[in-house]
Image (cartoon, rainbow, N blue to C red; front, side):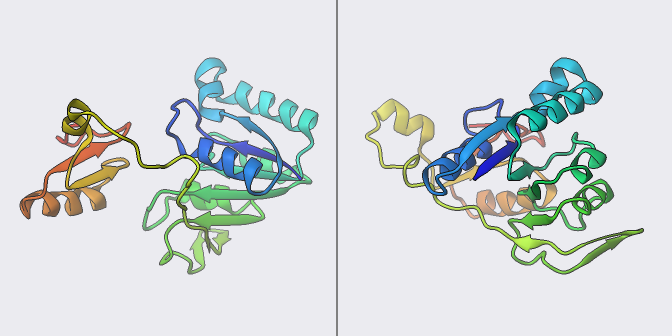
Length: 196
């Protein structure tokens, strides 16, 4: 099977890299990736979509798996003969209108939130999310020996990996209030929280 992954890949810890590994190692798929955000930042959204169309025409995937894909034109997805799936790993309730419109053109729409699988209607658009959880990646995550300096830098009672959206911030405030040592790791931490 040939799979094209449309995902942000500008940071080595992004989920897209774990998906590439899993699709190659577990699914034994031929995988190509396209970092739509990076390309859009280089050439603009319109031209990125043209480059993506050319890339799809060249690779001829059986499956196009998109992560978020907020910059990918819905019309481009509608035109595909490949199976299309959109995986939106962030919790947003209610889902923003742009996401419902985009998800409506995909064959499948996945969320990591088990409780968000009810049918959603926004205007003329209707989607039925399916649950696809994130998973432990044992060939990437393993115990390591750390020095005292590393333990000081990385050690904590609780580690939060993600972005500081309103819902997690409330939980993190409670963790701190309970007296736990908290470290935050993420690319978009800015609500007064410090990145570790």
